[in-house]
Image (cartoon, rainbow, N blue to C red; front, side, top):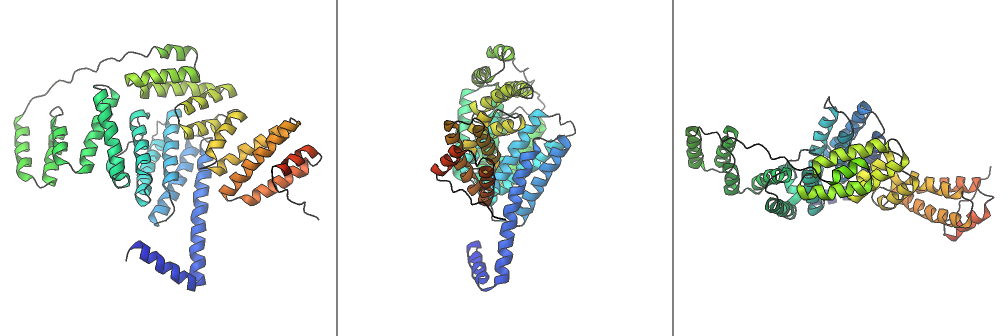
Length: 424
């Protein structure tokens, strides 16, 4: 039977069998709590040392694998992708000579691919993520298009192909050109276009591994006579073309400005110039390393790092940087407003800090703004499934500040129900 029919039968049986129904509900609740715990582990992992970080991420990956192996119907792709992005960013900041964290990244990508196949995300969004990793990433993670092919579908594959064609047309040399060439080969493999794949391989400098791959591709397609003919030709060729030395690419002029005054403005200027020359991947790694060094020294520098990442539209990285380097409260609140939609639980501490900071000002405008932030906090708790925690928090807050009648009035005016005090 198909999955939908089986699900209907199981649902009908659960309606008649209270024990089965309770078992299913408990399993669903357990999966939800597992996912919440995994997200909490990632939140705290960035503050840990290398060994502890690897252990926490390993626990997250164990949870993902267990749920995938069990055939969970939960959408595991967001957690898996967050884990991949988190490890990738961490590798830019640490010395992973043991390779322990890098090993976690390979496993995370594998599980993300499985999660995407199980519950395909928007194919064009997935394609955009792959393109960002390939063309703008630090050189990792390694992605095999074949692992994501079914999740990408025709729309996602076409989006990647369109970008690859554009890059090849606009960049004749350099890192982007090399990446696009590799992706073009993988696209031909994924689409099953044997002629295109053989043509791409044949255009490469003659090497034994390339010739063997051509033979394997032709044999797999059932074109045995062509495979034998190509193998014979490869054996008679003894030419070795010398690969010309890579051309030295000019250092961006804006690099000097960044080195003299590292900050969001000079970082984004460096980015714009380096993107035009195809050298942004290398420039980004060293520039971000410098911004992170400074971020560890002051709140102002932490804010500069966060705003630099926001300028690249890297919202998740910006959030993690704000947490790790303790960015200023206004910056964290700004990030929380956009992050509360997808990750409400993560924003709760920020809104609480803001409310309590506003109350210390002891003026009507600040009390009014505190009430507005309480509304946001209430919404975040509801979305996170912790509405009772908000009631407890609000009750304690009102008890502490019960003499601030203007504050209490603003809270009531914001249509926030104040819990009644519990009588002993």
